[in-house]
Image (cartoon, rainbow, N blue to C red; front, side):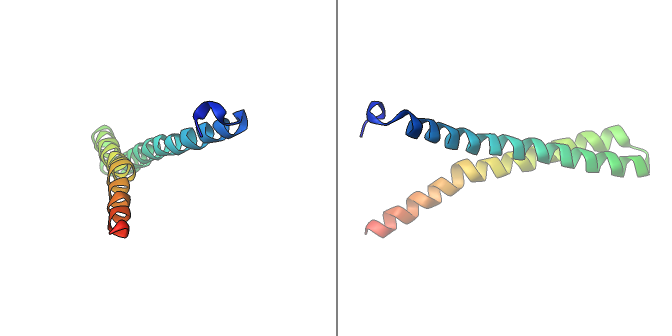
Length: 89
């Protein structure tokens, strides 16, 4: 069935589902940056290097969050395609 033939409620539900998935990815990335930045700040306070460890923590959090985003959006769909192709054989 084409997109035009679907009721508005179904199309709206699909949009909400897709947007909530991507909002979740963005929140995960932001939370990892914030959490690692906070940990870097707290450790930096104890040893006297707040700004350096805060920046390093935020960079590490960004890298970890981006890796998670990459795994969720690139690697897992590829693995799913590989399973589907092997099931068809």
